[in-house]
Length: 161
Ligand code: NI
Image (tube, rainbow, N blue to C red):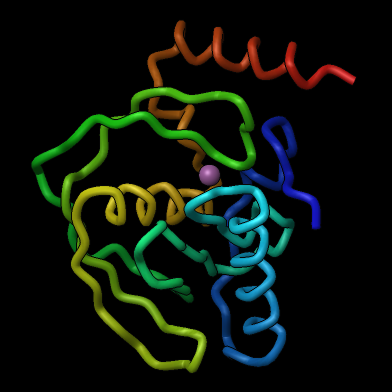
């Protein structure tokens, strides 16, 4: 399964709401969890594999596998933290990103049950990063323009065919 990378317009599109949590969605979720295991990531969103639905998965070492379907970010704290991020769609590029320190999210799990989760630290960060993918937003978008241009250039150089 191929991960779409920076420059692919699909990554900039908004994902669609899931109307039925069925076998197709369950299959996508387990595939996505397999990919993050294979590629040593901590999260992956549908659009990154061209699956334009509002779903993302998170699996941080030492934590359970988490699936978020039709998520809504209910709260984001005023307090922020800065931490280095990467993205499976922008391999080899890392940069500090400022994000809310704690969040509250509501979503549905793979069994079709709604849940609410309060998170902080790395989990909160990964959730915000993956949520952004559903909106066509990438972590580079938060980087000041000059630095971002340099990072994009670096990425393009490293990925030239
Ligand atoms: Ni990402």
